[in-house]
Image 1: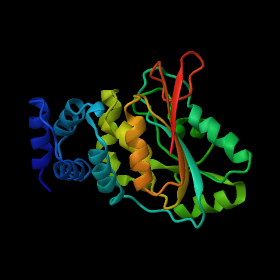
Image 2: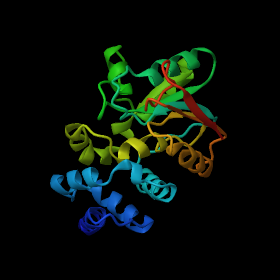
Image 3: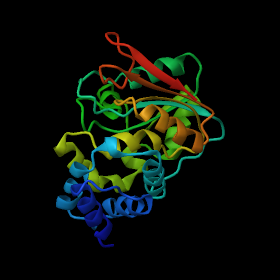
Length: 242
């Protein structure tokens, strides 16, 4: 696969021009194909500030990424809770701790996440430090879910193509489009309920539109005025329910 779409996107971004959804889809496919150089991937992720994303670009990015994902199938609606990260505040991983508490209250919970790329602590980092095994197959994860009402599905197992961008994201240490798209690409077929924290208020309505398209029954999108993708104790919080 060539990298023509990635090249074209970089040129458009350099000239402050818009990217059409069809081109975005092709560029994402190229980024995770293994045929695009690290230089081009880094240039694309640096040039494409995530705040430039709109609902149409997010939809096609989700489509491109989920087409390459390993699916996990479950026969009842579950809950997931995740944040975009990238707020630069270096808080501990609140969503992971919260997900365990919610599960203990009786809600079936499948937490989808990975290691940190733009903060100090990702979901996988905190669970691994607690002694959890991450590299589990879908069958093993569902067995744990049936036993405990909770399981964690580790992003790299279900999105193997992300390996082509993950190291570069970590080295860049900045928010990228994957911070925004990542919370929306769980490989699970039945996430009925979602709580998502966003670092930028503008993504509240955008995420609501996309989640409705994805068939979510109920969702809350949360943002704090200090930029935290959690509920802040120090600033006003905004939430949108759909």
